[in-house]
Length: 268
Image 1 (tube, helix red, strand yellow):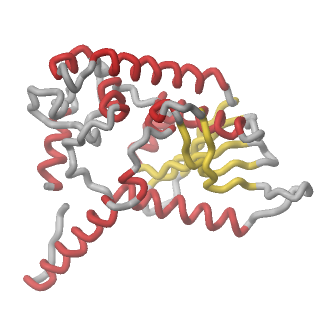
Image 2 (cartoon, rainbow, N blue to C red; image 1 turned 90 degrees about the vertical axis):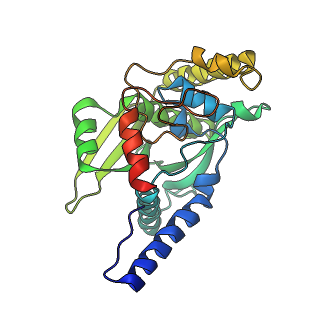
């Protein structure tokens, strides 16, 4: 957190309101969620997913929450505006399914059960929408390179969740909106493909099964056998611990870990 004021009194107020924002976010349902969600299943880093599946204590607790808070506010705003445009399709049911919980996969095994809140499903157009509020440079990257596997998998997982409710989409859509002083929107979409979701769930099961077989709580040295991507994105990982030599206490990250260290220093 960076907090400044024009005098000592204002400085104190800045620090207090900044800490209030951090504490309130830490207590929010989004922050205290323990079970893995559809937005995380496509994470390329198997080590990060393993930490998450095992509910491993987080080591990188100084992450700046403001981008996520702004994103949450945008989702609430979009939900309100679509609710105001709600219409009945003539079957006694609304056109838009807004921020509704869907079950992607049910299971008696807690870590295999997958549910989430779908941003918007349009029953008339048979589109499942996901809103992503991003920085301008990130939006340009998604425009040039596509959404990446993590967001693509998330989109199809929510498509499967809708299919399980009896509303199979024709297409899944990710709308990127830049946090900028002018409105910049990029939309990516493709035909819904159940097999994309099923492959992601199978990968998640493989990672879970390996974690259980390794008994990592009893054999911390075995964390070394769990791979990270060749070019990982570590900056916002909850388990990033630059310089760590003990993976059971936190991951030092890959080539981007220096960026993570700089971020930790900035917001500490």
